[in-house]
Image 1 (cartoon, helix red, strand yellow):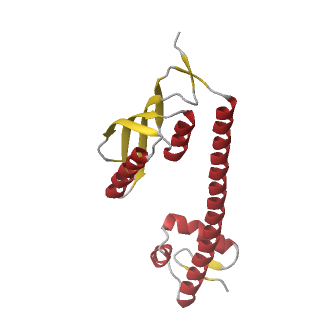
Image 2 (cartoon, rainbow, N blue to C red; image 1 turned 90 degrees about the horizontal axis):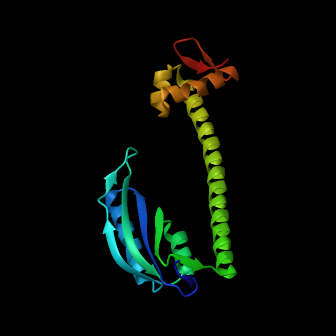
Image 3 (cartoon, one colour; image 1 turned 180 degrees about the vertical axis):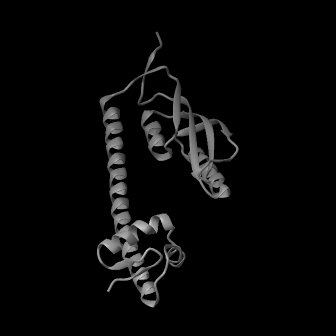
Length: 195
């Protein structure tokens, strides 16, 4: 049976993969190399080996690159911090095979995890509020643009799409809503202001 080590003092050897996705390619490459440089400067870690992938384009037009690191961490707490800081896609502890984790380290892990979850939750809620605000204002802007444009003369769906910059299939339900509210009328060929 493998010997158990005190996680407070154990040096932990592991392999990890950090991935960066974004664009342009130069920024993605610079970012991942910056991460590795920052890890090298951290006295809690020793990088034994680093292997960078070639940048790869994905179907969404983003570029992804990853680095596989073999490193030594000076304890569990720095390794937990590493996981929160760099969000590796995988981590594999090679040595020691077993560790005894004192309660204060487990507490620290769960508290850090909860703090990160609360931070992510706040970001998601803020983003949702901003998106709702932008959607509302965009709807009002399109409504105003359609009204001002149709005050000059009636226009077809295709012409309104060109003027507003909104695709026809996305604009039509919006125009139909304005027709049902009695703000616009549609004679089949063109939309115009009601009454």
